[in-house]
Length: 162
Image 1 (tube, rainbow, N blue to C red):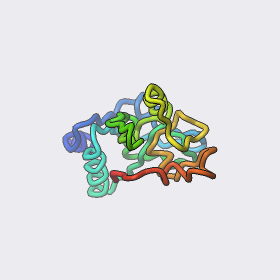
Image 2 (cartoon, rainbow, N blue to C red):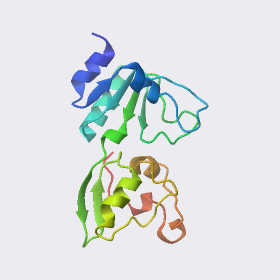
Image 3 (tube, one colour):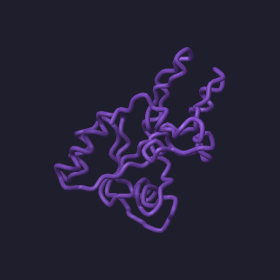
Image 4 (cartoon, one colour):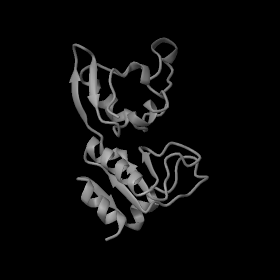
């Protein structure tokens, strides 16, 4: 049994090794570097993410997280494992009174804005590109036109599951 088959047993989500999926995860926004991963993991939960990272460490494999692939210089690329975080794209809870949202890291900002619109809510800081993931922008602070007043997107997080 090869390592990708072993990894598939360690996670509940998908471990994909077909050429089309691997090719789609081989470039980022900069398109300067190409790294075709051996496997793309679409996690079903945060536990899958943790299990994938543990598996990679135990087997000396590189692992990279990827949302919209809006990074450059190969930041979201790996020759071994790419974690496709867009599989974790749910809004889990909206508290209109507290004005808080619990959501997964692979959710794109556009989807969050659309889901909150009916409740006349909006995140205090949005980037100019709404087709990137919440986890991706928060991992780099997340600047937007309202940052001068409201801070970064990361500043507006009350809690993160890492």
